Length: 277
Figure 1 (tube, rainbow, N blue to C red):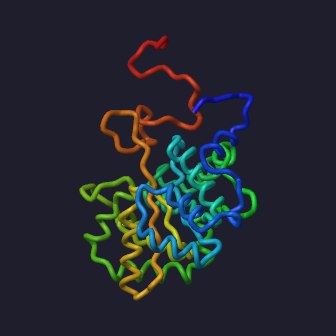
Figure 2: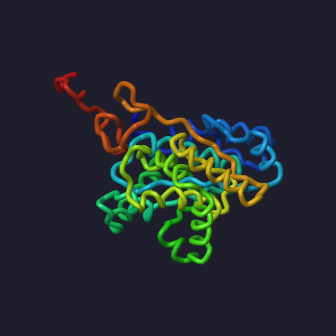
């Protein structure tokens, strides 16, 4: 994306998302097409259509671990997707997973540092043009909300854990940027059960996360089968932006050679090349 200093940063972002037309003026099919355009995969499309027909403002769940620098996949793409969802009438709850980042040993497990990064990332989304007007986007800190409603949250987490075997939970470790071959801490084993619980704790109708989070979202739908719940969360998994290195399926924020960061200069020297290239 070109950087024109005379153009407000939100203008190109609005152009890349959708027009600011009110969702009340859109047809059901128009709303469906906007929301569906976000996902590489949707489980299930017929459920999404039925949801939009029956609920004027569906709740969409997104979330992130505050951990280090923000690359464009997280910065620009998330803002575009959130703007699409709100324009189509969704309320977006963005779960700031500070406790989860601590469980995953981000920033050395220092919760204060994690929370400072969380505040910083929110400011980047504001600067890049995420539409936060009208109360359709809500940032929720996991540590605060879980503490405030512990009597709701922990029984749900325990029930999910009780109904699943350990190998099924370990297969979800991809959501933490880990593989099932990694040596995991007990805290990291607990992580997928908590993320699955988040979906129901936040009363989400739609899970809008990346393809790398697919397994735990499917776990949430399987949990609905276990408890005989008819209304399952719809999974809308967006495509992962590839890294800059050959064969990288996604950008890695921990690898500077893989990513373009939101605070990068407009022109940077190519690694391994002279500064004039």
